[in-house]
Amino acid sequence: MSSILEKYNLKQVINASGRMTALGVSTPLPEVVETVNFGINSYFEMKDLVNKTGEYIARLLDVENAVVVSCASAGIAQSVAAVIVRGDAYRLENLHAHAHNVPTEIVMPKGHNVNFGAPVGTMVNLGGGKLVEAGWANECSGAQLAAAINPDTAAILYIKSHHCVQKSMLTVADAAEVAKAHDLPLIVDAAAAEEDLRLYYQQGADLVIYSGAKAIEGPTSGLVLGKHQYVEWIKQQSMGFGRAMKVGKEGILGLTHAIELYLEREQETGAAMVDKMTTFIDGLNALPGITSRVVWDSAGRDIARAEVNFDANAFGMTAKDAVAKLQNGNPAVYCRPYKANEGTIEFDVRSVSKEELEQILAAMTKLTQE
Image (tube, rainbow, N blue to C red; front, side, top):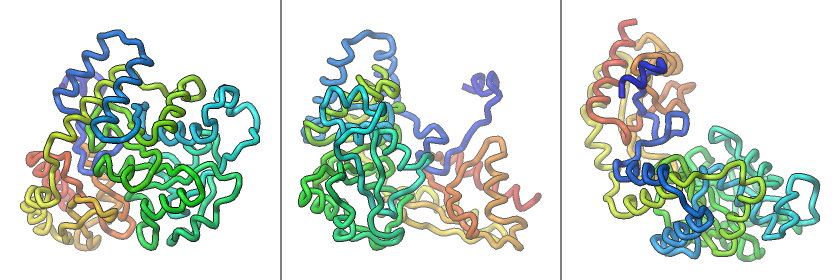
């Protein structure tokens, strides 16, 4: 509604960055919005709602148990707390009051210790854990992961994300073997993975965390699925520090419905993305100082993007300057700026219409005239 933008003096945003939290993540389907509205306007026995929807999701995904949480980062914190508290009533209520004589260390590959908008370590600490890095920034094998394990280890954490170092890293299945050999739970944060919701559980993870609002396109929420007892311990956190990150009834119902739709609908393929942006890339290549091409997601997902390389002298400004000007425009155009310091940006077209691609090209063209 344009009146909303005018009322609060907000700019229209074209999201060519991907399903990013900073831009509101995604836009749920009308059916999901209808379910959210029903949830907002209804009352429930909340524990029953949590349990019944969790059971329903678990059946859909053929996993032991599942629970809807407020977001994926809350899922990390509550999963960590779950493997530390392990159902103990006193620790549940006094987790942060003082030290407890139980394992609290969470071992993770060093190359996975990233900032996804907030540091992974902050979420671990929030859940009462102490982060221990294994291997090196550009390398972690199963043996290196195992070497970091000691009697104070409570779990292994694996971050499946484009933010992480990809080369010379063990796989989820490799990490699961290490976890099993040491009788430890493996927690996989797949918030940025946007893949098969069954994949990492089938590869041996005990808890898997997804964003509810990214690929699934639900309301702001998160999903944690996995082994029955661990998920039950996560649910208990609502009586501890998890009370501060509770999810609403509308989020629970909205995500549950969104998961159903996600499993039913045909997902957009990388090939379809290429077709969608071919004309756009041709237009970019017609601009002075610009070389554009199709590139594929560095984390191995079936996502194609338009890479744009800048010759700053010919274009008239650096890639970093172009990013800033695009964001300050109206509509504000957001791209993926992670390599702007190297003279390269990317446009993610999944949430962009053909009309918006034309607007982005017009904005890029305008920059050459400044």
